[in-house]
Image (cartoon, rainbow, N blue to C red; front, side, top):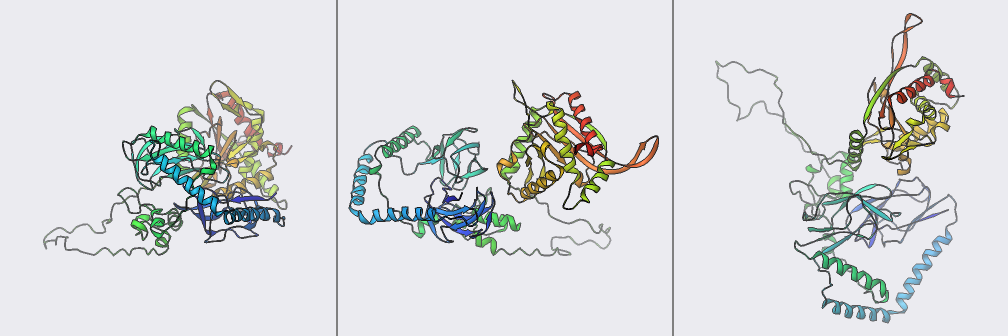
Length: 557
C-alpha cells in the first residue's frame, strides 16, 4: 500500500517549505530512517527522514520549489504499484481550490472587509495580543507526530532569550530534538512542564517584554481561538508578501556573543562532517551568521613555524650556563564541545541506573576450547558465518528461559517477570552507544542471530535504526573482547535486571586431568540488580551459561 508523504510542519511558524535538495530519486529504495530531502523552512534548513519503507514512486515538489504545509511531497510504495488514483486525487483537490478562488473573488473581498471590520472592533477590546509578545506552540517535528513531551527546559521563566537560543528538548514519536527560539525577549510563561506531554499546537511558552500581563495574553489567545473555531467563514484572508528584507529576518543572529557561535543547521552539519571548527569560520550571512557557502569555502589557517629566537628572548651572556635543549614548546588549549542529544541521554539513563539500582558483580571463567572448535566447523558450512558473540547471545537467551528471575523488571511495588526473551546487544557508534534488540532471541538459530546482529550493528553506525528496534530488551550483552579487553563490568541497561560483560578469549596455561596444558578461556561478568536478582540466582544463571558455552552442541538441540 503506497504511503503519501506531505510537506511537514517543521516549526511552529512554518506555513510553507522549500525542497533544498533531494537525497533520493524516483525508483530508489527507501528504508525507514533514510534522509529523503533537505527542506528549507522559514527558520532553518532541516533533514527530513522517511518513516516508511519501499520504493520512491513519485516526487511532488522539485528541488528549489516551495509549497504549503501538507502539500503532496512524495509517494513511497511497492515497485510498479499504480499510484494514479493518489495523483489524480491530489490534482483534482488542487484544481477545485484554484477554481473556487478564481470564480468567487467578491466573497473573498467581503471576507477581507468583514475580517478587517472585526479586527477594528477587536482592537478596541483588551483581548488583543500585543505585537511584541509571541505565543510559542508545540511544533510538529515529524510527519507522524501527534504530541510531544518536554524532556528538559534549558531556559526558565524570567530568563532572557535570544533568537537562536535552545529553549527546550522535545521528545517526539521518533527522536529527541532541540527546539530553538525564533524570537528575542523574556521567557514569561512555560505551558508544558518537564516530563509532561501535550498535543501539537498546545501552548508551549510565551516570550515578550518583561512585565507583560501573561494572563491577559493567554486569555486573548484562547478567545481568539474560540472565535476562529465558532466562525471559520470570518477568518481574515491575509496576503503574505515576502521581501528580501523580511526574508533576511528569518536568519538567526549570527555573530558570536562570547558563548555561542551562530550558524545555520545545514552549515553546522557540513562543518561537523568535514571536521571544521565553527570558531575558525567567518559568517557571510546576516549579522555574521555562518552559512553553507562559508563552510564550503573554508581554507585552513597556515600556522607559522616557531622562530628559533625572538626579540622577547633575552640573549645569554657569554659566561652563562647553557639552557637545556629540546625543551617542549607549545600552547595550552582546550575546546568546549556541545554534548549531543545521544550523549546526554546516555549520561542521564546510566546515572539513573547506577544510583537507583544496587549493582553487584559475579565473574566466572569459561573454557572456550569446544566453542572454538565448534565455530570452525560451523563456519566451514556454505553461506554460514557465526561469531563467538553470537554463541554468547544464544547461550544467554537459553539460560534466561531456565532462570526467569534474571529476566525481570523492578517496578517498585511489583516485579515484572517477562515470559519472552529480548536480548539487547550494545553497539559502539561515533556519538556514544546504542542497544539494538533481538526479539524472541531464544527462538533464533545461531545463524539467524549472526545475520541479525550484523544488520542491526551496521545500521546503528549509520544512524538508520528505528526507535522500535532499540526498545523492549529484557537482558543486555556488552562485548569488548574484540578490543582485547580481558575483563570489565557494565552498568545495567534499565529496565533490565542484569547485563553480561564479555571479555576476550585468551590462550593461557590451564590444568586438565592433573596436567598443565594450553587452553582458551574467556572471562564474563554478570552485573545484577540486587532488588530482583539475588546472589544465588545470579550464580546459577552463570553456571548454566557456562554449561552452554563449554558444550555448544547443547544449544543446537
